[in-house]
Length: 161
Image (cartoon, rainbow, N blue to C red; front, side):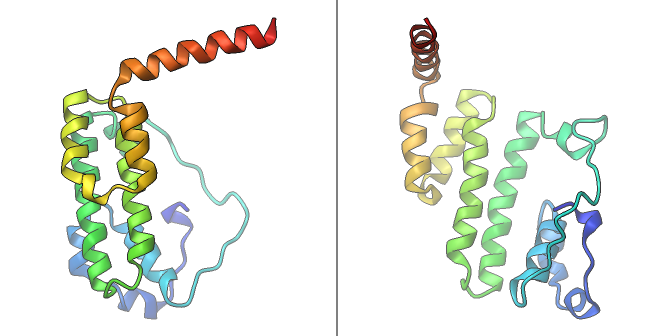
């Protein structure tokens, strides 16, 4: 959900841990989690705002720089760990899923293979079985992925003929 569509009660705002928020690369994620974690949240199934993707100066355009992207992911994973600790590890399972979303984003992102390998090596203990399998079967060796794409296209050609 977009941050500009959120309405919070005073009680939820007062319950925020501003020290943790200030250390997180993006605070709005934790505001949303904190607001919904104890009593749930309401969802309105309507388009409530728009977001400018990759316009000059936007957050998404800054994520095109591979070093900024990797640093953001590393800091988000640390932040997730801090918030997991804050909630006494009650939501560890959910937070591990969230960490693996970031790990998967790195695996899929077109960044230098050495940077990607270093990142995966440093975060391998956090990786889900699914991400470990994908990494070893698909992303670790880009030439294998390219070969599989060629085979897939060839098979499509036979199927359509």
